[in-house]
Image (tube, rainbow, N blue to C red; front, side):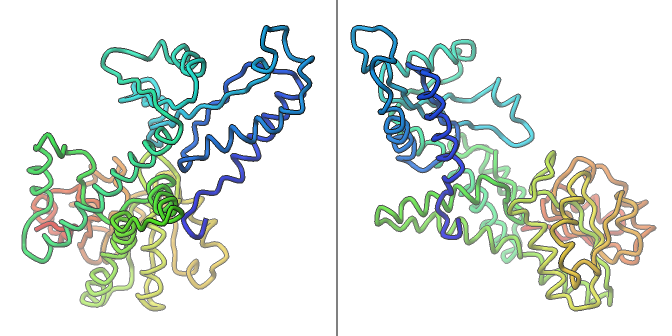
Length: 373
């Protein structure tokens, strides 16, 4: 939602459908499991909606039990998923934790039976209250987003002080209390989870009268980071009197065509707005370009300055500089010596710090990373 709150309309609509189906088909003694990432208190609200809808079911319709009223009870549990986009099947079969929230022992027993094949001594299985399970998912994503914004802040300071964030991140990642994951500096995170969940948690706190200022800044810094390279790119373009920019990668991360909150979309708009009418973009992404076309199809002013390319080689033809936005494997093993022959100027802005600066410079390219020397 515009204010950062979670949009629960679709979830609640499905819940009502399920409750009516339970009522109409007398599907008693069932457990409804909420997998969606929802604000604390949502699963309890779902439980109230379900119970209200099935409350009109006559007790005589219930199975013949000693306590007929308990037979028509449909319980609700929270079982948030921790799956990475593009890796969902593997993550489901190899979880680092299983989190379940419920309000009764019967519900916990059903959940244990569901996961009995996955529960192993090295996979923590955690049982808790509904709100705690819901908060666990938000806290998980908010912490990872905070870690990314932290290292990006360090990268920005490194750029001003002459330090190299790649080595800083490697060193601090060796501290077992910190760990190396999510310490890759760059031009910000995107996707459907981190931006949405950080803002939803901020909003949930606001509803309770609390200002989650740290998380507000995590989000604000990430939005600034998406625009970090724009003035540098424009300045370099003016320096070489060029007009053409190659942009590698448009999806928010590799192995998906998801463009939600993708830094590339921000870069495209900023470069075309701030670069002037003479700037042209040559875009290449292994799978997401058809979706990018749909986004800019109605913007004639932008679309006329965008060329959609079908290969890395085509994307650099006549280009003045390259901007690496999404770290697809295809971009990791390119031959800069060969690509340089197709370009007007050999310049690269590495928005994900995936290249060795010296190795790229040895091929005659001017290299600019995020917090790199």
